[in-house]
Amino acid sequence: QTMRFFAGSSQLSSSPSYPSTGGLDGYSSGSSLLAWTAISLSQRRLRFAPRSSAVRNSRPSFVLNAVAHPDYDNSASVATTSIQSTTSSSSSSLLSDWNPLEKDIHNWLTSSSNILLSDATRPPSNEEIKTLQKAFALFYGSDRNVEEAVNLLTKSIESWEATNQGGDETAGLYRVRGDAYMELTQPKLAAGDYSKSIELLDGPDGNKADPEEKPASRLGHGRAIRSLGMAATKDQAKSASIDYAVYFSLVSRLDDDNDKEAGAMFSEAIIDGIQRNPYAAWEWGMVNRVAGDYDAAAEVHRLAAKAFEEIGDKPRAVISAMDQGIDLAAGLGESNDSKDNGAKLTMAKKIL
Image 1 (tube, rainbow, N blue to C red):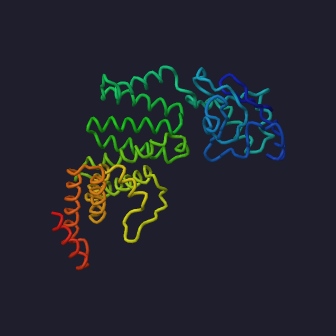
Image 2: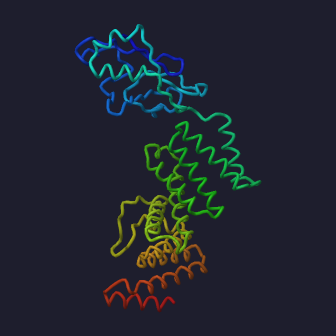
Image 3: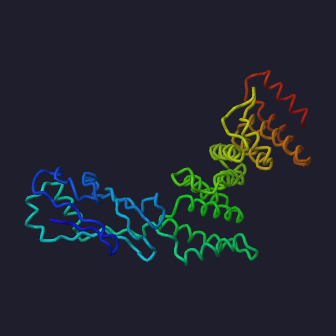
């Protein structure tokens, strides 16, 4: 009894002949396609992981329950991939000689419901590329239509996910759609897209992404939550505060080894990041205020005021300093240390 396996119309490999006795021990040769011991009887799944020589050699096209080694043409012309089994002779007379595992494998693979897999990893089609190009043109170009850009980006995301494109690429699409949602003043939808982008960038394909994507997605998510204002929950605000901290460490010119000067609240890398974008730093202070972390809010606003002074933006330096005073005053009841509260009150009066 020999079984042959196909991807589309291309035969991949033949299985070893079933031994009449001895269980799986007889499978010592000819099994370039399947590791039979990986068959799952409980879930009735076969893990099948072919290498694609045409697209992203490092990424399996799809996952079923065995190890596949053959390279094959995985061009866009193959719309679907299927694994089919054929038998060289009638199997009914042989089933009685097989052990339970062999029978289960045979019955599953030769059932009427072959394994059909929608598009395994393949390059985007010309039509899908044109859709994405049009979406970018409508969002970034001179003849802008952000709502239509969102619709086309949604189609592109669906195509990229259906064809298993890299997580780095899909993350970029979610991030851009998040930016578009922000322009349409839909921060909740934007936050969802930024979260998905962050999830993908933290995954196995994240290291392939453009270096700007991670900080952009983090800052985008933080800003989407900040846009909710006091409607944001404390947990949301705390999550956004983490986003800002990660953003500043990513854009810093220093390695974030978390080294702090004596008495400092933040690492040198984060402080360097704040100096590079004091506008985002002021936003971070506001998020910390919503989170109820008034000490952090006051310190961030102090650093933002200093950074604005250094670039000559005195109005924003004054606004940030005033926000520092408000944070200090708001946090007076947060500590039972009378000496600490006295120092905060003195500083708040001096600023305000």
